[in-house]
Image (cartoon, rainbow, N blue to C red; front, side, top):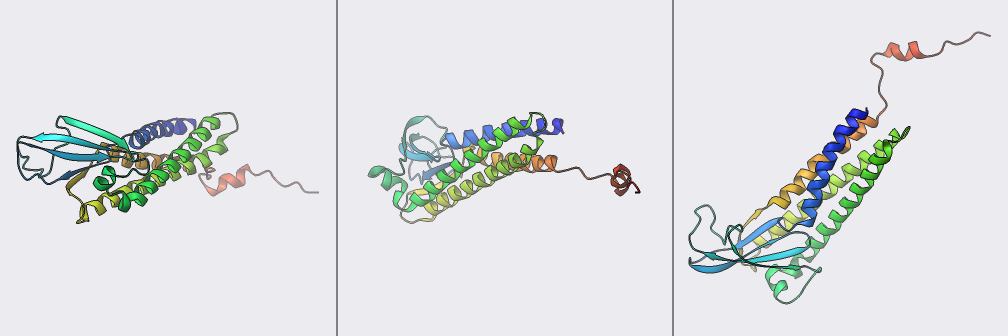
Length: 224
C-alpha cells in the first residue's frame, strides 16, 4: 500500500508542476491577424489567465502553413499587461473586454479553486504517512479529482473564449492555436484525475480473495 502511495505521489508532483506552470504562465492561446503584405510589422497576441501580451513582429517571408502574423517565436518587441479584470481603453478594444470579461473571470476563478483543492489534497497525503492515518488518502483522492475537474473546466472556458473571439466579426483575429501552457493544463487534468482515482482505490478496504477467507477468519461461536 505504501509503495502505491509513493508512486501515486510522484504522479501528483508532476501534475502539480504542470498545474502551476499552466496557471502562472501566459501561453494558453496565440491569436494572429491576417497578414496582407510582407516586409512590414504586424502584431500578434498571446494570453493566459492573468495577462495579455502583444508582440510586434517584422514579417519578411510568408509561412505556407501559417497565414497570420508570426509564428510567435520570431523575434520582436513584446508588451505584457495584466487584465486587472479588466482594463479599459486600448486593451478593451484589442481584447474585447466587454464580451470576454465573463469568460476570463470564470476561468481564473475556477483555476483558483483547482489550486485550493490541490493544496488540500497535498496536505492530506502528507499527513497520511503518519501511523494509522491511511484514512486520509480517501479525502486526498477526492480533492485531487476535484482539482483535475476544475482545471479542465477552466480549459474549456478559455477554449470557448478563444472560439468566440475568432468567430466574431468585430475582431481582427484570423488565426489561432493553443500553446504550451494550455498543454500543461490538459496534462495536469489527466495526471490529477488518475492520481485521485488511484488514491481512492488504494484507500478502499481490500476484498478477500475468496469468500471462505471471511468465514475462516471469523471467531467460532461458543456454546453456553
